[in-house]
Length: 198
Image (cartoon, rainbow, N blue to C red; front, side):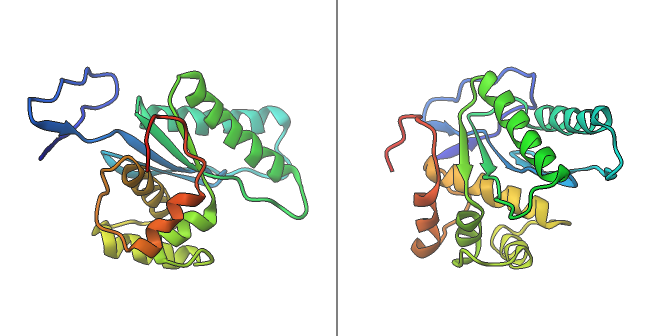
């Protein structure tokens, strides 16, 4: 079975030749104020930004708009967006609201473009990568580099790659073979209704 690459966002996608299957276009997003990790068929990247506690509402809004715009530009049009679910915080502060606002801005943008979104808990992401739901980010980074042979400069990009890999696996096009115990992590994900029976 031959897999065909998809073109960059904005270009038309040619129909697969007879007997071939197009690799699903899946994006993985590790949404963060300081460094949003993005994984697509073109590779991984990161959107780094910095803020200050003294930033005005307008400055904070500008930052969120910038991150959202960059994410949408990098992802383009895909068949499935896999985002890491939000983390609960014990003591809410200004940055907590900003993180939640950024997460919803990005997710809402994809929903508005009628792209299916899967919400993947951090523990499911860690388990799919390492077999342990409580694995630290460094362990996920090491596992991602070893399993996929990728050079990943940050754990943000490693997380995004794992999220993308989970989406492809769920769609029946796993990037590589993953142990059954690791694959069990797919069961803890809120997958969108795409007619996939797994």
